[in-house]
Image (cartoon, rainbow, N blue to C red; front, side, top):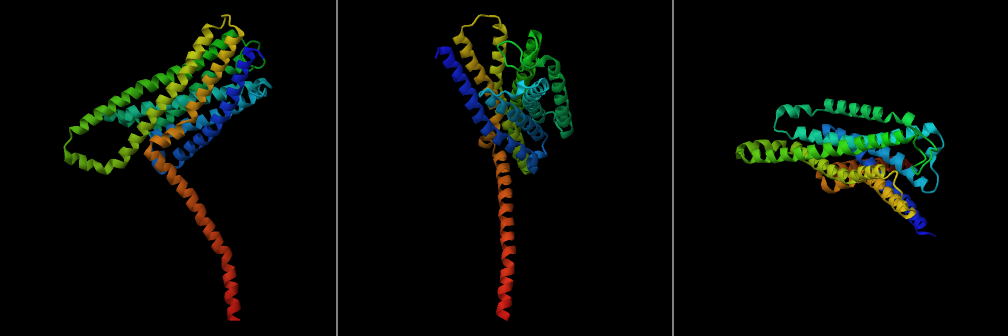
Amino acid sequence: MSNAAQLYSIATNVNRYGSLIIFLFGSVGTVLNVIIFSIDRELKQNPCSRLFLSSSIAACVALFSGLPNRFLTSFGLDLMVQHDILCKFYMIILLCSLSCSASFIALVSIERWLNSSVEANYRIISSMKNVNRAIITTITVLVLCYGQMLYCHAVNQKGSRRACTGINIVCLYLNDFIHLILFVIIPVGIMIIFGLLTLRNIKQTHHRITNINRNQINNNVRGGRPQRQQSTLTALMLIQVCLLTICNLPVGIHRVYSTITENTYKSPEQQAIETIILQLVYLLTYVGIALPFYLYTLTGKLFREALFRRYYLIFHRRRTNQSITIATKSRPNHVQINELQHE
């Protein structure tokens, strides 16, 4: 076996086992995120939690649509090359869900900046009504932007790219450019800018608090629980911003590199190495949407409390129902024994 063949074999194994591991851990984490942010009473009333919930739902769609197909592709079973219509809608759903997940976290950074502002007029903008509008607008814009794939994507095109790809060079560049803008540049840029602005607001708030007299602080202690919730959500946002920035930037860098070197001669070994890098880069994208639950659990005390409350309610109710069922089943036996004793 040549060096190039061995490298391609490594790329296949990286894709196969990497996709499987990320899917197993990520699917559990994203589903639990959806459950906690949608059911927990304390969290679901916050506009920021609605954005976290939307991002988790989009992450679920991306994981369940992207990783199983990547895993099957490693065995030569690419289901998306069977029909044009399946290829088109698959790519739209996958790329829209990936971009939605990143865009909603970008909206979280904006909401945290508004909420942490010392200006009351800015804090008023952070409302559930405005968040719902932002979510609907984001989904609509992304669907419209990726809708061009109904024309530009097709099956079994010639070239070194995937079988489900653009129909010509213009479509290839257009798809890469749109995904680079909507998935990397705009969300990451917004996250970094408003994440830094949020940190500045927090620093200003702490500076103002140190200048307030002790009586005023004591009067505000009653609102400690909501304040702790806001602090936890801000911490979760900063963690997510760092994670997505680290995981999404390599995708943008790789797309720029692949576009620049499209017509450059590459040896078989270099092509194989770039294939390995490509698999790692795209798996890293899924890591960015698979890890949040575990990071939230490790770093967010309020999130852990919500998780434990849900765990307690589920298993406590199950045990209570089991006890009632056992008591109900055993009751007739006691009645029969009492009747026999009376006879």
